Length: 179
Image (cartoon, rainbow, N blue to C red; front, side, top):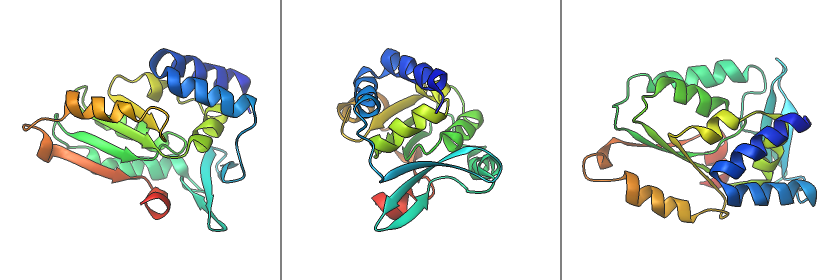
């Protein structure tokens, strides 16, 4: 764990998502993280996210070359409409989202839903995701912590002109656990 990374992530959460920040600080301080979420190291040395479900370890990133896997995944979105809205299940270690953001225009918007608050509490201790947290195109919803942001997202961003331009995406392994 790197306290400077954790502090940086918490500070960004406090600015943009205060409810999430309070909850993450509580999870970390009060040691509320169970064995259901874990962080591991890939073969190439990156921190990667995982969930234990039904006695099985599910990795949310590639265990070998997560950066390459994220780049390969994001390539499918190189030519999306400038109005496309993304609803994404899962954050993992942030690599997929970061790669996707690099392909998108300033007008594209992402509703990012991380269903597992424990996993996020672990990730913010190991991985700098402050750039994702502060990106104006990203709306971060975590579990039921700030679920009201979902309604706000719909009211502000979805209209008749872009309803058919929505992309629903589940990051690797999330669909097997949460859908």
